Amino acid sequence: MFTLLCAALAAAATDGPIKVTTWSASSTADATAERAYEPKNLGDGKQSNAWVEGESGGGLGSWVLAEFAEAQTVAMVTVWAGNWYNTEYWGHYNRPKTLLLEFADGSTEELTLTDEQKAQQFKLKAPKSTTSVKFRLKAIYSGKGVDTAISEVKFYGSTAALPTAGASSATPDDADGNYQAQNLVDGISDSMWCEGNKKSDGTGEWVEVRLGRSATLTGLKVRNGAGFSADLYKQVNRAATVTASFGDGGSETLSVKDVPFEQTVSFGSAHTTDRVKLSFTDAKKGTDYDDLCISELTPVP
Image (cartoon, rainbow, N blue to C red; front, side, top):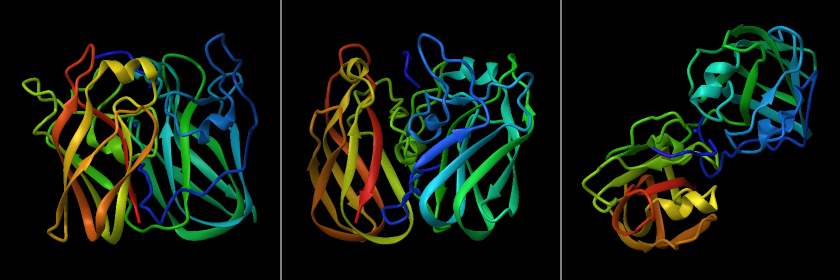
């Protein structure tokens, strides 16, 4: 489709990820003129930035340490394994197969990952109170190169259902990644959903955020279009007017500003609902691509 800065899941309004104050690592690959591979990339909310270990060979035994400002209860972990800059990078770098989690009290838990370019979510055997989590490379899936990469890691204090998303259509995957609806709720700023109806500018298409439980919502945080890139933002279609439908049977007509940064779209009244469906009734045309795109949709309580 087009080149992206290259999408688990974003937390429900009351179950956001735990804030990591410090990231450190046993080693880091040398930076290039274009990018650095330091461990803080694991918590920057971007899939296009990765930590890459700097050991000889595949990096087995290498580790990253995430430290919290105070003790936190960790119940769930989501990992974006490999280098997600694009599909070529993902295939080039090694990906973790087994990660050994080590907590501040010395206890451990092992995670086994599949070799897929998708966010992988793990519920711990039991919630763990800790001031830090160290994850160590115990086994890897080999890429074409020698270094192992991880793009993002999120920790959650609850195993409550996190949002999922669906859509009427999606642009097919390409060399830059995928444009599936789940990108709307992944908490990653440089992924996005794009509709795939080539006979439409996006009007008549829809997306739906499913909370997995009932909650009272007052609005949505929206990152319209390709909201992570000023150039790409202008190239794709963006939402202008939507009809929002709720699980409580209500509906509203909402306006979305044509701006590349996050905005809050408030509902006319609060809705107690387990889902929000947005049907696009008007779109702002892009300069290069006739695909309507949205980067993020986050429910607001």
